[in-house]
Image (tube, rainbow, N blue to C red; front, side, top):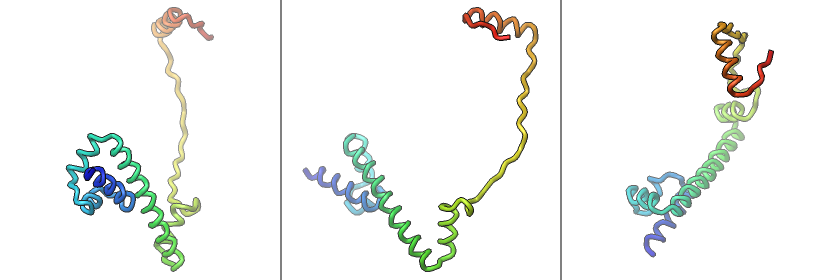
Length: 128
């Protein structure tokens, strides 16, 4: 019963801040115990993975909210960051130009004979 409540508390903490070390500190569970539980309990491991994913989405929302607030306050680095990652005109570009030439090597008569025999064995008709 106590272990189940501790596991539930860990999962809850990871949904808020998806960092194992912090969740362990807040719940008083050692990292070794956390990883032992995760290794032995598949359902707990799935719940942990889901909680970390949800926690990451939550932190992403917070970060984006702060970024938008900074943009509204005319913070140039924030504006630049947003444009580089959300507007195609401002992204970093790398242009590569070149010429690709396909060269087909000439087969020797013995190589042609081997291929012809292999096609015959595979029952594939030879194209001319």
